[in-house]
Length: 190
Image (cartoon, rainbow, N blue to C red; front, top):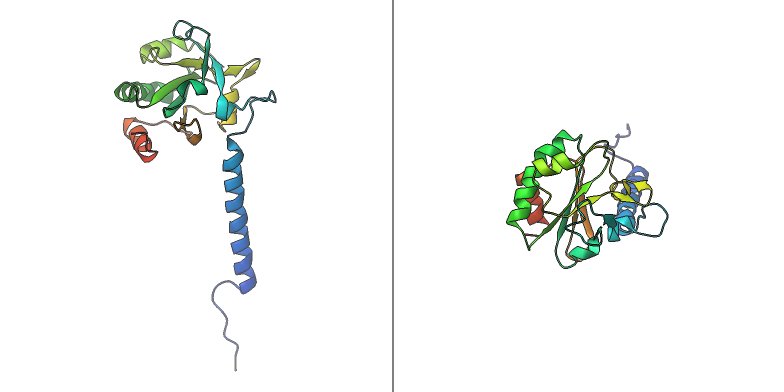
């Protein structure tokens, strides 16, 4: 009598697959747990969880700094832009309109990062100067927050923080008003 071939994975292969998936899940959970403690250059300051960046507009920020702690108690959207980024230029009007509509309910901060030119014309053209504008630099390190949030070199990028200042999500692509509002609703910000 011929032996019938089994369809599917052997018991050993199944256990290997289960263990592999388990290791991936535990690794992802551990990474998310320590993600907020990634530092921005070895100086002991956790850029993701407690960033403190120089303001681009000192008139709006008398001490010349903008800190995540300044927004404690309110969900905060942190949008990264650069003067050379066409996708940034396209999404900034939607971010501005959403920020105006949600004033007092959700804070918006605009971060100039990965800059190679002059940020001001883009900020003026998109009328975001009325919001906190910061430069992604700490000491001599450029793009520290961008890198700590796992920016990949492209722009734009947007980080979402809850009212306690905990990082919820990072989006590495451009968003329009619909995408932005869907995320804000999903996170319970609106």
